[in-house]
Length: 351
Length: 245
Image 1 (cartoon, chains in turn blue, orange):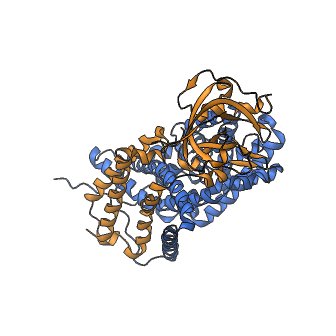
Image 2 (cartoon, helix red, strand yellow; image 1 turned 120 degrees about the horizontal axis):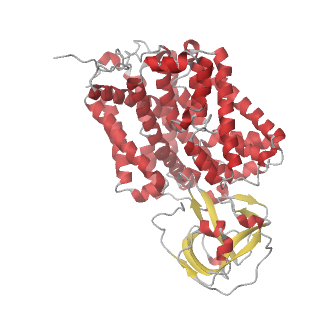
Image 3 (cartoon, chains in turn green, red; image 1 turned 30 degrees about the horizontal axis):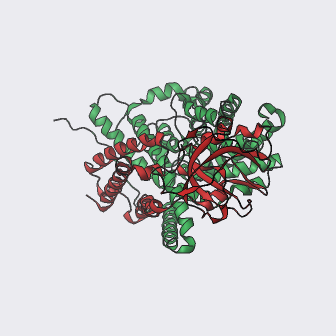
């Protein structure tokens, strides 16, 4: 009888690293806070806030978790079924071209921001270059057909908004991918588990077609299940913070400062980061500000949100080093701000 | 089988059971959280979770590959937090407090923001003269009234919505609103009409009502907003699906 190789996660280090102990402390603190808040919410004074937060929290989770699970499954299938030499031909041999290609990959594989991180993790594990992975991470949730359709509907088929949103998303993602590619690569940008391309560390070659299909599917599911446990907690922490923001922030706060275009852009960017809305729904929120905010401010909300929000930042910790996350946050915020100021000043197509 | 693996199996089983229940017996609860066009997602997630559960049940991990158990406990418990918060979510509702936060207000009143009403471009100003009722529509959706007010001008309409009594409004006027969701309840935005009713101040906020009356548009905050004029307001139970889709 032939002994088939079975997927086993890489052995855990014998001594916990300091980062693991810090993560443990933060996770423990989060659990303590949500439990205390839950108990506090049983009192009449906090009841309304607990109720509203619970609806927002559950709504975000019920919408986002399925996308994350599907993303994990797609990541597992990529891990097992995409041969390393295909990735090598498509991406690693033509690095600059790969960035431009990655920016439009969402048109073929539409993924929202909740699903993108598990997929990108596995693509990186397969050997996709750092800059191409960053570009797909940022562009994928914007440059896709579903987001185009939702934006068109929200703006009553004013196609200017659709083309500008997707165009800006693509251009900004490609620029950031190329820019960060100068400073970071797989060796200094990724967590150890993801930089040792092209294998996942589980001890066998997934790209090989010699194994029975059933066994390969089982490996894919095991990989995907591990991704759920790795990334899921970041999604839940991010969703809770987003729900808290959504339950406490008054939309009118933003209106009082609408007269200054650059301030309006900054405020809408802040709102995009804090509200953590799905890229398929955020156009409807942005459209509700039509006539009240400059168009560039609404565009800032729709371009930044799918690239950077609280839950995404937390999910980035499952694949990138802290220095990369800091650089990514700084670059994305700066680029989106400058791009939107330029849009407001030089391209009044939306006005 | 190690304890941590058993905990993972319990977590997967809990989520699979929760999602499975939502798409089968718990649709009324799901309707308060997610747009019906996205319910297939919850079904798909149930299938994926069952697959993960199946492979984890068959999986045997050597102890050395499970790492430090005490470090992993909080990360695993975090995955159960949403299930804890589902308890208060079942009985909670978006009410007037949410409306005040999500509805954009000016000093002159609320601006209907959930739909981009073309009424803004209308050259009608002020209270139109009362028009004779022509034809009744059963439970006219508020979205239609907001988006296509010209189609309902002067007609008798029937609305089902939640009340909001604002002291800044005239004594014979209150607001009646529902939430419109695009994807999930977190993006819900209020859609409302004004109800001209002689005893508006006797109405309690956050009650579900049915009102029938002639539709017209009135000016509020320098834009035209939909309104109905009625003599009778009937308190009713909350509809099975309270949101507008």
